[in-house]
Length: 92
Image (cartoon, rainbow, N blue to C red):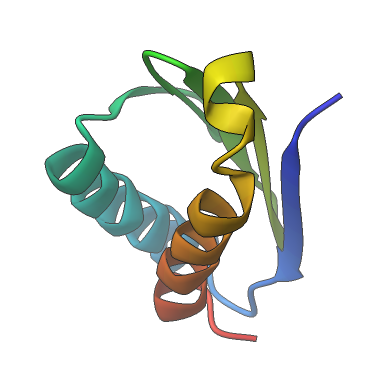
């Protein structure tokens, strides 16, 4: 079970959705030293204390994040920041 879960309809082509996800991952990599790799339409990412995946399909983007016990106390602030990145790249 994930600690943070976000699902949203994206209304983009598959290529546009992937470009938005790539842009979001690049920003998160720069800001939070997040490593990521694509496996088809699923982006797996991790850094110490955080792991998860972002998956794309024709209509929806889904983000699942697991936090370590050390970072779980920071969940509200991490969730706000991730939500901000998500809103910028996949507006509702």
